[in-house]
Amino acid sequence: MRLYFYGGAQVVTGVNYLLDTGQSKILIDCGLLQGDKELEAKNYEPFAYSAKDVDAVIVSHSHLDHIGRLPQLIDEGFKGKIFATPPAVDFTRLILQDSVKVLAEKARHAGVAPLFSQSEVDEVMRHFVATDYYKQTPATADINFTFHDAGHILGSAIIELEADGPPSPNGFGETSPLRHSSGEASKKIVFSGDLGHPPAPLLRPPDYLTSADYVLVESTYGDRNHESPEDCKEKIENVIEDTIARNGVLLIASFAMERTQQLLYHLNDLVEHHRIPRVPVFIDSPLATHLTEVYEKYPQYYNKQAVAEIDSGDDIFNFPGLQFTSSSAESKKINEVPPPKIIIAGSGMSQGGRIVHHEVRYLSDPSTTLLMVGYQAAGTLGRRLAEGEKRVYILDQEVEVNAKIEKISGYSAHADQQYLMDWVRSFTKPGYANGDGRRGLKKVFVVQGEPEPAQTLASFIRDELGIEAVVPETGQMVELD
Image (cartoon, rainbow, N blue to C red; front, side, top):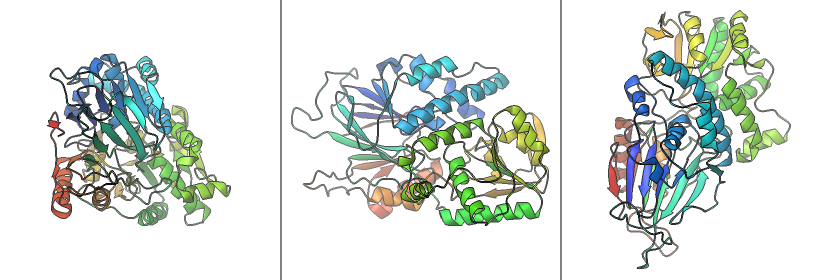
C-alpha cells in the first residue's frame, strides 16, 4: 500500500494525498495552491497522476486549499464520487462559484486562462455525496472511511480510513474485502485535515481518536501557541475602543467562512452586553452573507453554548448597527459613512476581494487600524502587511502604510502546538496495541505546514511522545507496511 504526498507537504495549501491500495486509488482533498505567483502558477500544471484512474475523493472540508482543484480533476478525466459532510457540500458550491469570478480576474491580470468556469463547478457538484459524521461508508470495495468532527470550520472532518491490499505492479488489482486472504488485518490511516483550536466560538472541539497505524497531522501552527478565545474577545474589544477613540476606521481582513461568523458571534455578544459603543458594522462580502445563511441551516453542528443561545431566542449573527452589503454600489456607499466604523471584508490574506479596495482607501490614514484574524501565507499581501512593510502595491497602486496593524491569533481555526501534541498523544503508542481493537501507532507524517513549524512539531512528537514522526516532501511516496 502506497501513500503519495502530492500537496500539503512542507506547505500549508494545495492539500492533495493519494492512497493506492493496489485495488483502488483515492484522493484525500484536492486543493488549490495559494501564496506567491510562483506557487500559484503550479495550479496550471497537470496532476502528477492520471485523474481518470482515481476511484474516489474524500474531502476534509471546503476551504479552497482543499477543494480548489476539483474542477481540474474532473476536466482531466475523474469520474468517481466525491464524499464530504452536508455543510461542506453546501459550502463547496458557494466557494467554487465565488472563485470563478476571483480567479478570472487574477487570470486576466496575469494574461492566462481562468482555472475553471461556472459550468465546471456545476459538473463538480454532480459528483458529491453528502456523508455525515460517525457513519462508516465504503469509498471503494476495499476502503471504508468515517468522518469525525475536526472543529476547524462547520462540517470539517478528520478522516479515518480503513484500507487493504498491496499495490500490484501496474497499480491495480482485483477487489478484495477489508482483510487479506492470509487473515492480516487492514490498515487504519487517520488524516487530521485541519484541526480546530478549542474552545472555539460556535464549534465543538475536534474529536480525539485512539487507534491508527499511521496518522497525518497538520502543522500550520506547529511551532507556537495561541491566545485563548476569551483573550481574543477582550483584544477585539480593546481594538474597537481604541479605533473609536481615534475616530478611525477598523478594517478586519477576514475569511468569509468561519472567521466572519465567529466575529459576528463575538460582536453580537459585545453589543448586546453594552461592552462596546454601537457603531456601523459592515459585512462587505456577498460570499460571507451566503455562507452565514448556510451556518444558520446547520445549528446541529454547533457547540452547546451556541445552541443554548439560539434556543433562548438570540439571533447570534445579528445585532443593531450591522449591515450586509451585496452589490458593488452598496460597497462603495460605505465610503460615505463617516468614521468611526468597522468594515469586515475578504479575502482574509488580502489577496483579492473587497478588502483590498478598502485597504487602498484607508491604509495611508494613521487613524485606521487593520486587524488580521487569520493565518497569512508566505507571499501574500497580508503577510507583508503583518511583517510591517510600509509601502505596498495594491491594485497596481503604491500605498503608503500609516495604519496601525493588529493581529489576533486566538481566532485561528487551526490548532496550536499544544493542542496538536495532545491530539497525537491520544493515539495508542507503538507496541501497545491491545485486545480491544486499538492499534499501536507506527508513524506520524507531519503535513500542511511550512518547513519550520512542521519540523518543530515532528521533533516534539519524537522527543516528547516517543513516536516516529517525519516531514514528507512534495511528490514523495511512502510504503505503508
